[in-house]
Length: 165
Image (cartoon, rainbow, N blue to C red; front, side, top):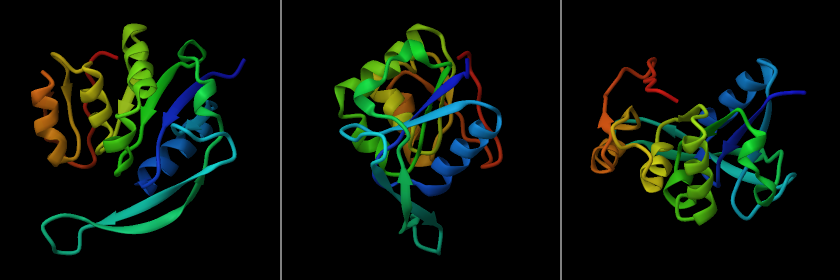
């Protein structure tokens, strides 16, 4: 039986932070179920491409349509080995969905691997699961991690932070 990973995303998820993990996990043999609240398999989410062009923050350009491979309403966390939460603007609003919070808490309760990139930790802070964890994120999310009881660690863009699951 193929091992599965759940990829949580939404409209204006960051293009690279969605497509690259999706492809990498697929190449490693995982079935990646990409889902978005209120959408079904075959629907798409709009992606965004972020770039730093000299202003105080990044510029957001329209990316492509990313096809969802599973239906959000069908998610059962026990079917998955791990959870990946994409970055971009999607985490700021998908965290408002009670089922997103419930899913996140279920992965933590089961001690399954959870990864979040860029703004993805906004979902983790909303779920209240970062107490005592060291985590990194896009720097503007650092205060959210600290306020949620986590320890924010600023790292180079080529690095990651791993703390328990």
